Image (cartoon, rainbow, N blue to C red; front, side):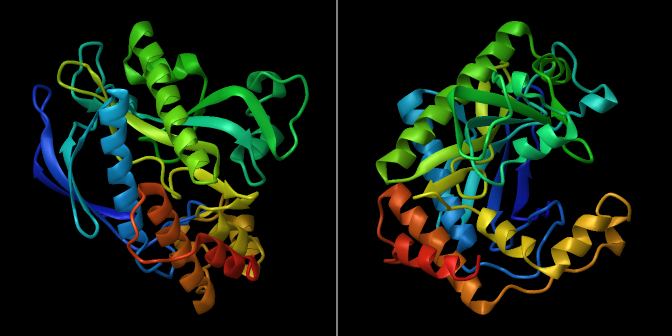
Length: 316
């Protein structure tokens, strides 16, 4: 299966009673704004994400006792994983006794609201109110929550849709106790990632995870988490994530054209984005590699995150 940032090879199909087996191959492609694959590749991005994701899955299993689908890392950019079934709630495929399937949610934890957070658009559209966030008035960019705000969106629909907690539990086929354990698991993972980020001088405003129910309806962490593509990290207030690519494109004429038609024209008629400047491609590649080195505590490329950021700032 070809994805925008990784390819998945299924070696053995999952059943209700047994995990399947597969391999993730992380690519150097990237996607933003729901456009899909953008025209450039970011050298070694796939390797950096695979190394960080593998490290996180191992540590979360060992230190938190949370089960994951991780089986092994193969240099430079391959991850062996257990596979679960994909059951679509909109087709009525999830039953109360279903087992070994992907929970059809993106589970988002928000510790703060940095500039660029999708929460501000949700407030503008009326999808959320300040009260939904546990606040009395509209927050300003940079707001930090006293406790993480949990956000849920659909995973297996044509476009992501924000859900209330009751809706999220209903479409997932989870009991109240299971849903509480999903939230508890997400908060534990968020806390682990936040502490790791702080240990290397980064802030962790938000992130997302995907979970599954195993053959015995046990909760396990799937896909990857805690990388610059799944989470937002900040270095002295500057984004260490693919947000820097969003910020660059938001300044271009292409983005204004794209944003004007994304909801009115079919995808094949959307304007095509121009390529990134070569210097920005190199700097973003260095950013991914340098944050990976810091995160896993291993010198692979010998890069400075601060130097990469200084170069990116000249573009964004």
